[in-house]
Image (cartoon, rainbow, N blue to C red; front, side, top):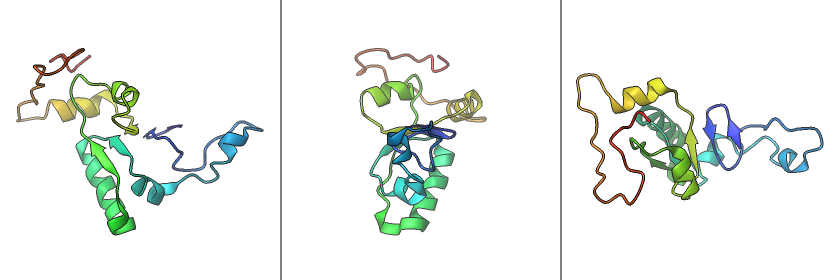
Length: 127
């Protein structure tokens, strides 16, 4: 399901359903934050939101927190990771978020190692 802050296999909150859409209505109020924290999904989040979500999950479900994070990688779109089933969800970010993540002020941007990549590897992380 597509949500305002990201894409996840199940809705976090009550989904906006079309009238008569039984499959959508069956999701009820969604899985909530506790459901996300205990889903076992691996999701792609930028570092700062990941830190906040990780802390919230630790506080909410403690040892039951089995949410995993896949760091954003320059040149690799979340769509490719979803298609490969490497991740189960991701946050929607703005170009400014990616700019800050990959081109930090007073630091060098990360270097993408294309040597072992079979296809579609580029140092041009702006595309």
